[in-house]
Image 1 (cartoon, rainbow, N blue to C red):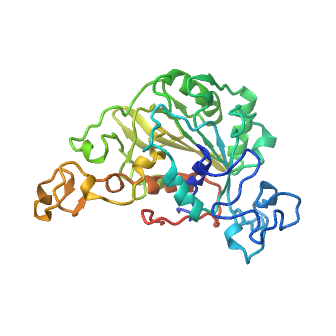
Image 2 (cartoon, one colour):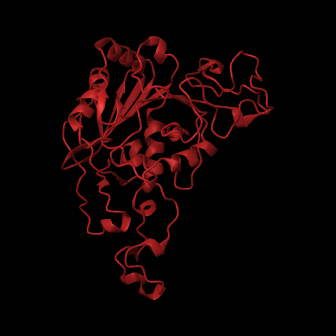
Length: 360
């Protein structure tokens, strides 16, 4: 059963697009106490913080909603605690490949609270029981302090701590493909903790570099990450998302192959005790370029304002009567909703609204 919750919210912290530090962060759309008091719940910390968290307070197996300012201030309530580990930097970065779609969406509608773990110094955190106790879910990005140097390596004890935390109910999501010029270094860094903790690992290869469709120019010449297993919850209402130059994934025997192609496994999921892990072959589904919600026919190749000619245009789907823009071709918001929904700990408090998401 797909639980009603969502979390891409984490990405508002990535590129300094919203105020955040490695200490505390407000709920998206909220403030430090709706009444203007920096500490309205008198617990000695700035609202809203990790210290307000109660987890599964009634032992019913579900995480609870935290409302530091009381039930009459629902805009400051939060649910999941998300940690973002790594840096969001990519050789693909430019003006149309930012995370503003994530920011706009999650600032307004998410019930998560997020910490950019290494926001202040880009320094590798130490993964141990004390660190992990502060989170319900972790998103692993580019595991380095800089785009072309200072890759991180995790110890056996750190991987063991992460595995134990996942077994107890924690969830992780990993992405790769940030640096197509140093693939070997990038996958070695994430694999140093991913493989011993979950059995999943990224291969030292480059895939998703060619756009197979003869209509790719309709959606910015981005190849498709497709081949989804329709029976897996992560594939709910998803046929493809955009991607470009990532790494295939090696899956352990107990893993579920969510998406694959002739180039290898593209999305792999595994249950480990009470927790779950998902590995994704590329980082491009994070970019706003693939999140556009509005179809503007005038931007499509070969567009003619005369509607009587649209049926002859390559980028117009005559059967469905729409233009093949990214929001029509790809199901990026739905994909991310499904990923985090599947991987996050059991709860009934995580939610987000979006016109392109269907909640089962």
